[in-house]
Image 1 (cartoon, rainbow, N blue to C red):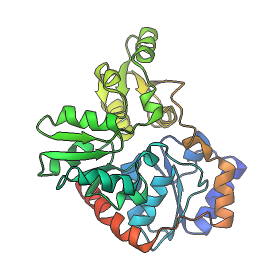
Image 2 (image 1 turned 30 degrees about the vertical axis):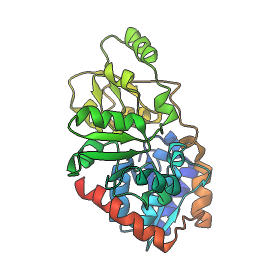
Image 3 (image 1 turned 60 degrees about the vertical axis):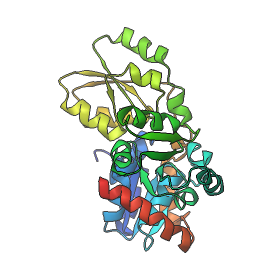
Length: 303
């Protein structure tokens, strides 16, 4: 983990002492990424949460991620240091609204982006992440699929699977939705040799000017394997810290305005306090857990 500050060192001591695994999303602040046992995207973290031998999971990410960890490992204590770290897109759809929407499309399966609340996941057939959304939708026999809540990701899936009819929910990630072609072109003018990597939560116009569309883990993998030496990173700027750390011999150019304020709510002091207090914990009703596990486990089975 490299050289840690005193507070970071204390966090690591407590994590070992209290049998806690610390998971952090790629968009977390650098100080938090540096004390995590595992840093990754939603799919990697969901998989690691189910396999971690520790009795407690401390999740540095937004609310739906900690909820998913609890649903997949209900026997474990799951700590979310700042409950106010919530994903706005996840709250653009709710269980009741989705139930009503399904009535207009009888028999059509629902794919929920993992960026949804536990209440919503309880109403769906299968979940997906940005890393496996195309694979998940392709796995379904139905020619029609309801996709919630990210309309941009849904449109990207549609572009990859023209044989399917994707019925979109009007949700979006404000960080990715606000990335513009003009921003990308401006960075490209400054760095003409750089390849453009963008997240599939971006708008179709931005995706159309990219050299590669990928999840955050997919971007890291692509950059590591590519012969190119410079990359413009079209996603939340927190990923650039990890990319520079993991691949120090290449240049990564962030979009400075692509910042998720909700991901940045968890500070290093919050992590220490959560470890000391062993909370706040994520609590889900048994019924919600039972109804969340099948769509999440179906997602994980597809990798």
